[in-house]
Length: 278
Figure 1 (cartoon, helix red, strand yellow):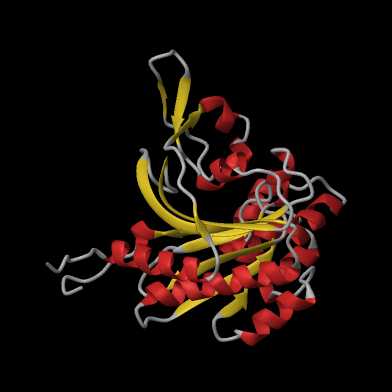
Figure 2: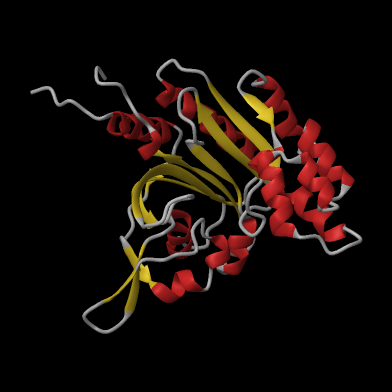
C-alpha cells in the first residue's frame, strides 16, 4: 500500500536521513517540563508566553515551548562534541498570532568543544537541509554575527534603545537606526554586510557557497540567545523564514555546561506547503 505523505512529512523523513548520514543521533524528549525551568530562562524563548497545566501532584508543568532548552538541560557534560537531531512539536504563540499553536520542528544541536570547523559544518548542513526540502526551488541562507552587534551596542557612548535598534536591524530600517542614534558601524553593517568578527573558516565557507549564502544583518534578532554566528533560511514561494539558528554559548554557561559551546538550527515544518498534486 502506497501511503500519500504530506509535504511536511516527506520533509521530515528527508531531514532525518540527512542528519543520520552526518553522524547525528536522534534525541527524543518529554513533551512536558516543570514550569520553573522555562520561567527562569524566558530571555532564551522565542515567545514569552508559556502554556501551563497542573499535574495530579499539584506541580505546575509546561507544554514544551522550545526544544533546545530541553536538550541542553538533559545532556551530560562530556569531552568532545555531541551531535543530536530531533523531530518534535513545540507549543507557543507565533509572531503576529493571538493564540497558542502546536508547531512542528526538525533540527540539530551540536554541543561541546566546538571549533570553527564544527560551526562551518553546521552552516553547510543548514544549506543541505534547505536543498533537501526545496524541491528544486531556489533557496538562500542569510548569515550574520550577533556578537559584533552586541559589542557595538555595549560600547555605544549613549545608552541605546537596544530593543528598538534590533527591530530596525531586522527590518533593514536605516532611517530608524539613524533616528535612534545607533552606532555608525551598525548602520554600515546593515547597509553593506561585512565579515566583522567572522573566523577565516567561516569567511571561506561563505565564499565557497556565494550563490546560496549572503551576509545579511537582518538575521540578528535575539542578543540574549545568540552570541556568535546567526542565520536564517528562505525557500522560494514561502514568505517566512523556514530555518533559523546560530551559536548560543551563553545558554550552556547559564545551565552549568562547562567548557562548552553550541550551535544549531530548527526547520519549521509547518511552513512547508505543497500543491494539490504533491
